Image 1 (cartoon, rainbow over the protein chains, first blue to last red):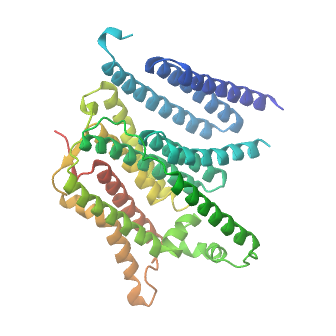
Image 2 (cartoon, rainbow over the protein chains, first blue to last red; image 1 turned 180 degrees about the vertical axis):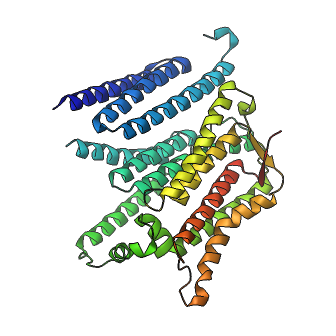
Length: 99
Length: 312
């Protein structure tokens, strides 16, 4: 196993860790806001680490660039949908009990 | 070993998600399970080295169909004036068991017959593969769709148009009106998202169309991606329902069928069979027309409107 493979595997495994942590948070956290927090933060970082791992594994600047675009698009979609869901949830909660 | 594990997870996941789709606690969770089912299905196609099907399944099976199902679910509840908390229809054990047994028996006997059949030495696939270079496109899927089974593709477009006409008839009775919910209030982030994502969907659609000749892609995938951009514009209130189908919309709706049929008839006087492609240019012309028709049909189905106009 050369250095490239070691780095790629380490990045992929840590990416998987963030996905698992985000999923556990989604299932275990009590309300919409903390679930969104767990999901989006973990997924953004997890996706970055997995894209980074795949880029290192492939070792091609073109593929690395494409993976970067994929990550940025994922980031954009996750940010806006998280914002919209949180906004809707805030409108639906009782003003007295808002976090 | 790892590949086998991934395949096993996908195979088990497909069956489990299919069960969850049928047995969901309510219609909403069944729809969500169906969308996830489509995504796992597209992974399965990718694992089977069928990237064209994977793209189509992700864009049409999971994406557009999922959006259509979700918006229908929302509209049904608005029309019925109820809160969206309806369970699935009650299951009948007396119907479920015999149906499941009969289906299992059918699949088992079909599988047994398929296993005992002798392998066919020469199938149509081999013949099509050998004569693919005559088509002028190097992507075998596009070659088959427009060259070797053009009649099926033409009729698929006719089915799509018929589906839209059928939806029009139902919608004129039901009058579903504008999309319900608070989606139309302005959220600053949404404008930023649209200004990036809608041009990207156009770019990806044109790329898929252009790539279809030599790589995975084509009119159906491109049309679905373009329609996704249109669905976003409808959801965010940038496009709203018009009372009439405008002339341009009518032309675009039948463009795919019209261009495909006229190109298909063009070679008839020269003694060629119907739907013979006169050249690569014809394939790209037809694909472009199909893409526009598919995209507009899907967006109009989503909006459940006769036409669309830019909202004031």
